[in-house]
Structures are given as structure tokens and as C-alpha cells.
Length: 250
Image 1 (cartoon, rainbow, N blue to C red):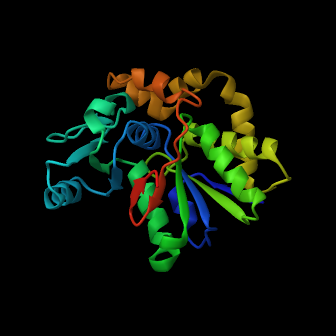
Image 2: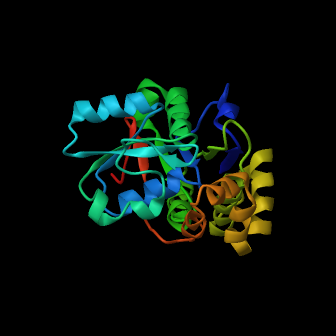
């Protein structure tokens, strides 16, 4: 099976995506998405801007919708929730539709959707991964590979268009998990590099997250407790799926 890792969504330009794509934004969008859906959220609609999020929520109806997201790591004024996964408890999100905008993660999903378009999007299997659901994502991809799937592309959200170590390590952990699960893989340069980073950093994820630019920024913003939450490997067995512009567990 061919496995490719791209460290930012910008690297997707000119790339032909396989049926299976995995989007990763460890700090914090995909970690939050996993936690929210595991706790009973009905769906998550990623959007690009604050204004768009507010407009969509109003159109759907505020009784059933929660506005979620961040700018510069902090909750957005007037929104119901920020982007800290611990906020997304069952009491807050069960049965709700979430409209979410973040600096990097939601934009990565939109970039994949743009590369897909039309029928290609409907046929695709785009998954959300973080350390929280790492094992579940690897298991699903391994099963697909055993069933004849021809490849998977791992897309790191990065940080404002640049490389983010935490996303690369998570992508590398997926690569390592797939290698351990079955047949030999055909890796691009990004996948080889990510695998090496995972070998180095998986033993102490919390420390790695503390060292990253995003981790330091969260600490400075008083959100350092997010790091220990997002460093939990295998907390959840859910695999969010992005289809028709929203994430669900269906």
C-alpha cells in the first residue's frame, strides 16, 4: 500500500488524492473533534471564518447548534465553546451539531474538500486523526489495505502554512502502526521523515508537545493543560469521517 505524508495542506497542490485521506491537527482541532463525537455530538461542520460560522449557525437554528473555535488559541467572543477538547463533555455536546472554525485544522479539511470536489468528495473516505484515536485510525486503514485499498494520504494541518512537529509525529505514528500491521508499504519522503520523528518522540509525547511552537503558545495563553489531554494515546476508539462537508461517525 502506498502511504504519503504531506506536512501542510499547501503541499496538496497538484496532487491526486487516493480514496482514503487522513487529516491531522493534534493541537487541537482533530483532538477536539474526536472528543466531541465520542461524547455524542451529532456532527461537526468545519468552516473558514468567524462570520461564516455565525451565519450558518443562525440558519440552522441556535437551539440545536453550538458555535466552536478559536483565534490565536483563545475562544472566540460570542461562541459557545473554544477549541480545548476537555470542554466538549457529553453534557455540553450530546445531540448537538457543532459549527467550528479554527486557525489551522478546519482549513485543512476544507483544503481536502476543495481537492476532491463533486462526486470525488462523495466517494472519498476522509478521516480525522489525533493521538486520542490513533489505534482506531490505524486499524481502519490496515483493514482497508488488506482489502485492496491502493493507498492513503496523511495531511498535516501544520501551523499557519508551516511545518508542525506534533502533526508530523502523529502522522509518523500512523505510518509505524501500518507497518506493524501487515504488508510492506511504499512511502514517500514525507512518510519516511514522519516515521523517524515518531520513533524519536512517541516515548514522551507530553514533553514533545511542550517543545513545539503550538505547545508553547498554548502554555503562554494559559491553556497548558491541553497538552496532557492531547497527548493521551488511544483514549478513544471513534474515527470521525468527513463527508459532504461535515464530520460524523457514520
